[in-house]
Length: 401
Length: 228
Ligand SMILES: Nc1ncnc2c1ncn2[C@@H]1O[C@H](COP(=O)(O)OP(=O)(O)OP(=O)(O)O)[C@@H](O)[C@H]1O
Ligand SMILES: [Mg+2]
Image (tube, rainbow over the protein chains, first blue to last red):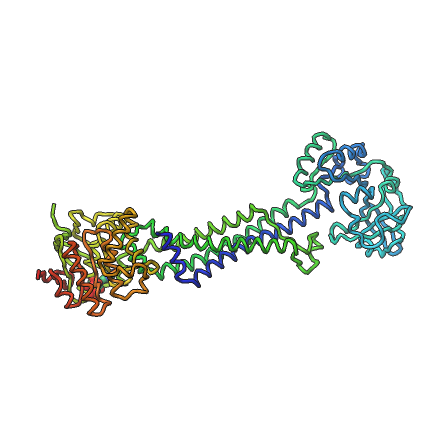
């Protein structure tokens, strides 16, 4: 009966109830959508970090990353790479020879990071061939082809077939140089990645620096979640090498992920707070408007538990209507934008290495999390008005009759 | 132990303020079973205050209120609510009913709170509404009923809990004289045929004439107590 009274009570003032229902629905939607937006943005970022920048895990000489010394190669890199390639869940392995070089074009000199690769193997891991802007991916030029980013091309005023000279320090600390011809220009739209990046064939770079081993072995897995465990398995087997999963390679990524999580909590928190106040306010009005009626009910013997329950039920029922409505709205809008994408309409994010098109996405757990937050927020919001109702003195309330 | 339904001893209710108001000022009153008593007096004489004290809606400043021998001024607030539910029926001047419930549901509500079994509840609701002349208005909401009909539902609701007595503070104040007379007829009939004890306050001389006992208050004191 109390449920029946509560249910009918909420329809006494339809407009007010609709306002609360819509507030709950929109609050939930805003919270869920904001989370999905951030999740989508992070997914994009993580995916691009793994696919393009880091792969799932990388192997180096134990000190290479600190010293950046060309002498610190991975002994037996060919054999190690083959071992990895045979493991389950491995999509591709690329051995890379790395060197800092001086680049000389007709117009300018400067420093670049040279990556010596097997073009076919690298294409599987980083798909760098997919970002081709002009020219070809290691095709059409037989001697010393070089594949470089649009940024480098523009900076050094290079076109397809332009000639550049790369100068490096070899393993014996001697200066060694060779000329290369531009075979292709790529553009990943990831500013920091493209900056000063050039690819050559590993055999060409090996000749230049005087080694036959790679400095880096990058591995792409079909399941990114297994990166940490596979990396640590491998590290145990090769204690002389440094084996790091992407999360440890991408410096600051852990921090960024944690920070965006925190931001999301703040955003959702602010939305919830706004929701809280609007519900408290409206329910308080609903209680104060009914002082005489509630006073009469207490006078004739409706006890505090029942009065409290009635006001709570009223609020919770509103939440039970607004909540699912908000969830449906969230689900549909996230699904829609997950396909269509939200174009932020600016490339400033590219400079930070973020995509400018976001595909919001959210797992079931987060829907549940936000829903639980909204429902508990509503219940908390109902407590104050319900307490207010309990404070009514029936003698005073009925006197107003 | 007394055999009065209600007995007050030196009952006082003072309101603190700029000046202390002696709303009820030393009332000794005995009400027996089956009485049909009117409390009258000028505005501000303390009628509402006295009824609220007897009904356990308000606490006395001093004195005792015994209902069937039990001192209700000793009860906690929660016990008082429970006591009101089980022992007292109320009819107010207005706002007696829950607007979102029908006549039947309003009457049933109090029995639901008393946890009366469903079959008994159904039977009693129908009988009561029939008795107050609203057998054909079971499913009407208060807004669909006239003022007199609403007060009749209130009487039915007050009786639904099988109270020891019914308190009615100016039950006819919002009714025209004809409707007021009808409500009084109903109350008198219930008093006579069912032995329901009624205590009501009023300003209306015609209502006063129907009472079997008239207690007059002035400045919170009983100035006359006449059985007629
Ligand atoms: N909460 C209160 N605080 C202070 N004084 C009050 C309060 N309630 C009532 N009084 C005063 O107590 C006195 C008795 O009031 P009460 O309402 O009992 O009179 P009444 O006989 O019912 O009057 P009426 O015929 O107008 O209904 C009045 O002087 C009133 O002003
Ligand atoms: Mg009064």
